[in-house]
Image (cartoon, rainbow, N blue to C red):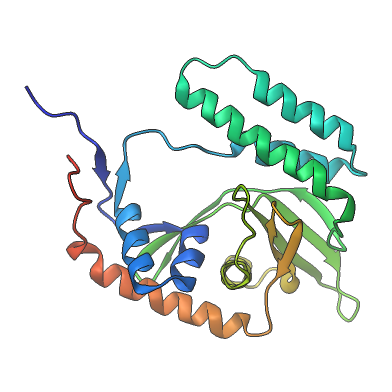
Length: 242
């Protein structure tokens, strides 16, 4: 009898913006673990925060914040019927995320600009690595010096009980700026550092692309080349079954 498979191998080097930021800020051991996790995807379902992100994005777009409505939404998610243990854990994780947002949203300062729903960009080939980019919200505002519009995007991050490390946030915001600049090259909308933001859902902090964003993005592109080179030699996780 065949053993049950635990992982699926991803043939082409592939990483999303979030993991690329984690990779850049991580130790060598952490980098190896991230590269391994990107190449060998576990078949077991992972807990996702999709419902929480949708609820928080909708609340930001609707504004002003209705704290009680957010708490009610968290309770609704927590109390939903679950088909199995994984679904129950997912509901609990999403409810925690929304409830935490309800607790910290009163002190938040939203970016100065017109907010709209996020969108899925096509994966970008960066030095041999497909980089997935899916911001949760888009931001635009008139540029005061030109006829162009400043453009930005917001990506949500959340870990229960833990603030997002600022270095990770800086790398992620730098990546948002760099990728938007690449996608929007020649367009009338011009990506702006102040509007390329990583939002920490635990602290309520918006991290804008830092002053060194351009050089940080160049380093991320170089790291992609290294990931592409090492991809064929990345070994499967211990005891994994492909």
